[in-house]
Amino acid sequence: MSKEETVAFVGQNAQGKTNILEAVAFLALGKSFRADRFLDSLHWDREHGRIRGTLDDTELEVFLSREPRSKKVKKNQKVARPRDFLGHLHVVLFTPDSLLMISEGPRLRRQFFDRLLVQVNPLYLDSLTQMERILKQRNALLKRIREGIAQVWELEV
Picture 1 (cartoon, rainbow, N blue to C red):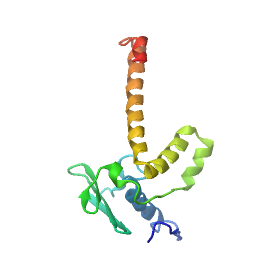
Picture 2: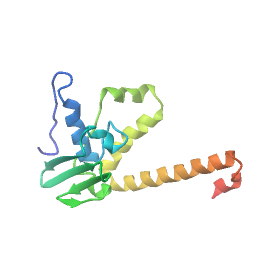
Picture 3: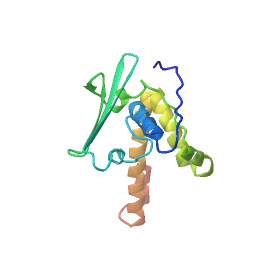
C-alpha cells in the first residue's frame, strides 16, 4: 500500500474492524487510540503482542509485554524512539466517539489535533511533552500553595 491510498473497512458488528484500525494506529502513533495504558490493548490472557507492518521500504513494529512490563517500537528492526517512529504512516482517525469533540470540552479537540501534528512534525512531540511536564509541575505547585506548603510568588519562577 502506498501512502496516498484510502482504505475502507466494511463489515458486520464484532468482526474486528476496530481492532484493525487500532493496529494501524499503533503503527502510526506507537500507541492505541482506545486505551490509555498500552497493556489495556492486550487481551487479558495474553502475555505479549506484536503488530508489524510495512509501508514502502519501512518496516514498523510495536511489541507489548506484560512481564516485564514494556512497550518497544521498532523501525526497520531497530528499536526506535517515539519521535523517530512517528511520521512514516499518517493517519486521521475519526470514530463515532470523535463526535464528542463538538459537544464536550476542548480537551478532546486538543487531543485530536495533537495526534495529527505529532505525525507531521516530530519537534511538536518534544514541545508537547515539555508542555505536559510543565503543566504537571505547575499543578503540583498550585496544590502545595492550596495546602499552605508553598508560596504564591513561586509561580513566577
